[in-house]
Image 1 (cartoon, one colour):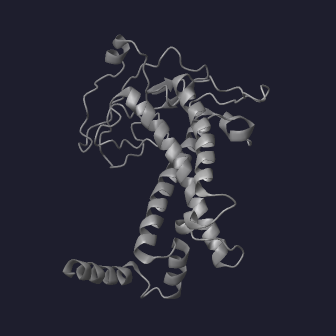
Image 2 (tube, rainbow, N blue to C red):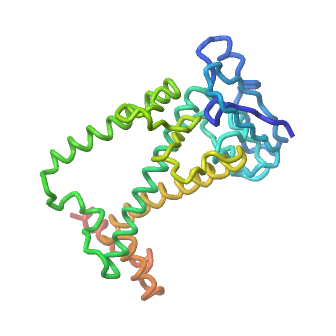
Length: 279
């Protein structure tokens, strides 16, 4: 088994700006047929000289789990990234810079989706059992708050824009935002882009273990985030078709499993669609 060493999961697939590195950073850059049962070939990537100082070495296991058993993953997915199961049928990560961006985009979407899923399911469940009295997440934007929605939007735009701006700066120049602009003594301890660490982002110190343990935790985060993205999308479609939230649907199904199903909802929808077409 060959070892693929990278300064981070991102540095494992990124390259420097020079054209020589761009042409030589991928060994066998032609797209592999992911449905052929060929033996896994380990590919070598060139890390940029500006990579961070902490080196994480992971083994590119030829027997690693793949999205399709027996398939051959594309060369740019060598198993060094968290949550890499060799799935890229459209070749969206064939360019190292694009792959570097997609890794960060997925990571952020996963984290927002996990927060969104918690914001959908937990308040609705607590309202259902009588602990809270909150509006449905689907109609929460129609509720009157302490100020108007325009003010809320502007405030949100300012704070989220500030946070996203610093994250973008860290992607362009890793480590440039590690020091708190207000409290200089508060510094981030993370060594990889997307994993800032420190008291605010890693209070339990889980990001300071062995490379294998860190990759395991990051893989769990990605897998839970992907599931959360599907869950949020499912809750959205569910409310469109049923008019209620996921917890109400779950309780209704548990109370009457034989009738409260997706098929009971699809029949009225088909009838309504036919009526609209006839009109």
